Amino acid sequence: MILEGQKIKGAILAALADPEMVSILDYAMYKSKSVNDIIKETNIPHTTAYRKIKWLLDEKLLVVDKISISTDGKKYSLFQSMFRSISVTYENAKVTINVERNIDPTTVLTERFFSFKE
Image 1 (tube, helix red, strand yellow):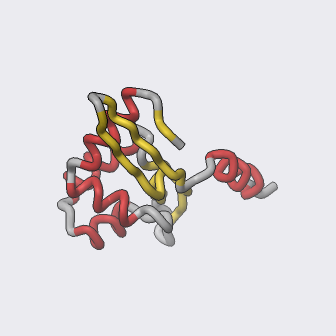
Image 2 (cartoon, rainbow, N blue to C red):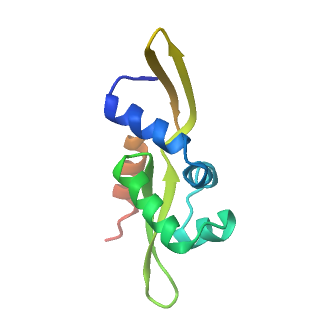
């Protein structure tokens, strides 16, 4: 799928230029991960990880896949990358970004809807 919006194009280019954001997106690509899992795996400092994850969420490059409750009653989110692959082409002053979605939004909504218990 070729992206047309300038805002999403700018966000993707900014994320790809940042090695820490790339590692967050890579780690959360195939399976939903918590912030703590991402921090442990990528060795990104806590404050930086939270800031960059928030930015990726705001730019819709990362999504909250699930919200879970730990054994001690604390709520935490599991994140997943929106895209499986990103291809950037620059030709004749035109930037073309082709992406393969990692998550189908309708599948996520359907799973959440049917996961509610009566």
